[in-house]
Length: 408
Image (cartoon, rainbow, N blue to C red; front, side):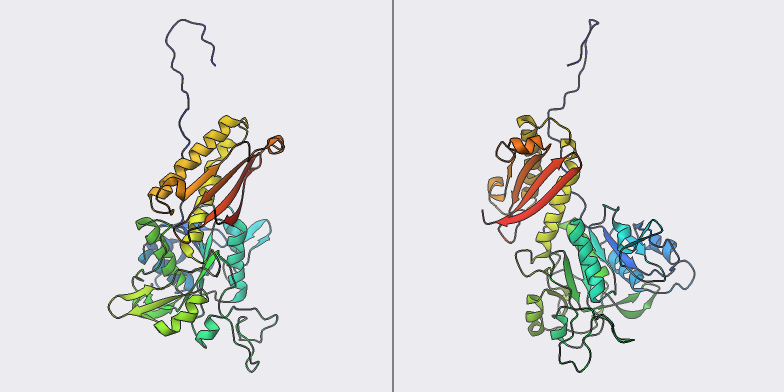
């Protein structure tokens, strides 16, 4: 308490209320690839808020070259995206992460950019590229990958088969194909992962630098825009499906209802054309066939994880006692109650939708002596109706979060 020596009136500020946990953004996408000007800002992620800004920074001149990355950014803003990052990988065209001469290159350049929640490499449809994107998302646990299928298709069976990389592919043949005559089914799809979604086919779209010309472009740009649009209108808990692909006039090939059955089960999200409704996204699955099979569930948990980690740093260095535990439980409960009211959690009451436990049981003497405070948070996403457990540990070096599942 302050000591007052002079008679008079004093005003003191006392913090008694909750420290709000705000929902972090979930729709900022990082696009990687070669820009029309391959020498523009190489390996330096640049924030882009509209198409004109992209043209100014990465496509100067009267007749810029139309690249896959440019086409994706154009479709992103047409479909509801409002902010993205562009990472030009330059002439090499490699998105693989590495450090050269003290500079982060490729996907490694995105490591410090915490604002990014989605990653895409338009047109990079091969096993090594899929691994680069999925590995980054699984390692950071704060991003979700949007993967493209190849433009050309040998068979629907190949589309549902996991791609593998040849050690030494013959010249001119992509690394995701199986050698002709081998008797094996070629693979196109990304490997199993709950941190990514895979889309097919490519969409027919106006060339951004000559809108009178129609070309096939990778679907990831339009899909990232749709993710952003749905997040803004409904929330990250709403699946980005049954949504129109704005600006799309056709598809590289048509997939029928009968074709889609096995593809959907294999985690291939199909874009289909309906005579009365136009072109729509008709799938909402990750590349995981287990409890994390739905895109909205995984992205909801990414958002919750990041929101908790970024807004509970005030806990570090506080006295580790029942007062702190009560404050943490109060703040997390307020945050999760807002999610429940927004329709992101299942349950008739907050008690059915989530729980927060931070007490002597989660913080025995040995945990306190180690300088940690542990909180157990369980939430029931809209689908499936299961609790997924976050084990949250706050200590002097920051926050750590692990997760598991239970049917509690």
